[in-house]
Length: 358
Image (tube, rainbow, N blue to C red):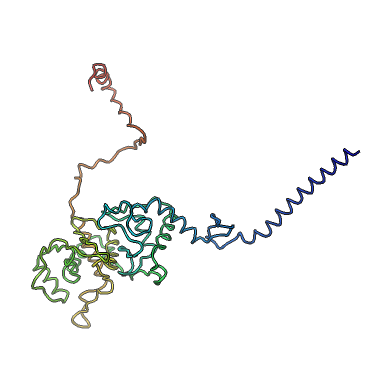
């Protein structure tokens, strides 16, 4: 009898324990559940100290810090000052994120870039520099890197949000023949924008003055020495750089017409390249006459620069380029096996092996 009572009491205690556990879990769910739902897009995958939840912005910065340590710290440095371990091999140095003078953007020279500008640089890299493309990184990782890069400089908090320059329509886009655009661009490059003060000139002195007259500007009596070569210019960080010779050098922000238009129109922060989108305006001699220079001429200059790039000599001739006619395996470890000899050659190959020929 005593044994039965003891057994029954033990069973009751087990039931009470189970019921108590269930009630505790239910109560915990009631208390915690209302706080589990947040605004769309918030990332709560990383709980902070004491169980507090972090916003998506905070987790982006933390993920960016990790990605920066994997992909960027070697050149840009832990402090983001452009003094990473590899920086001593580069001239000019990698970008200093503390100063936050980003050269290539769609905003006016001297302004901060947009997130789209930073993502384009991360994705496509900078041609002819040590900045490689990171096109295969997930979009979230790129966003995280952008969020973390912004933590290095107070400018991102002190200045208003970046705004793109106004973009005018391309009057030459639909025309298959770009000769008109190129000819007009040659006039703008040499006669109005005088790009040859930094970049090389690609026409004679006489032609430059002829173009100057066409845009209503005064002629030059003297020209700088070495007119057909680039001139070293000092950046805001004290480094000397050579503006590209378009027939020889890479254009780092891209060599397509849209890329070139962006660089001309917006300018390049920290360098002698000004913003041209606000300066392309020279009225005609009379109110009824067409303007001598107008904003759409930036497109003409872009087509002209693109034509110069296309004149660069090819590294390989057409008969030196071989396109594979079928897919081939990639061997990650060791040398690939030697190709099999055709059937009619098998007998000859076997004889070479037997007699020790290589």
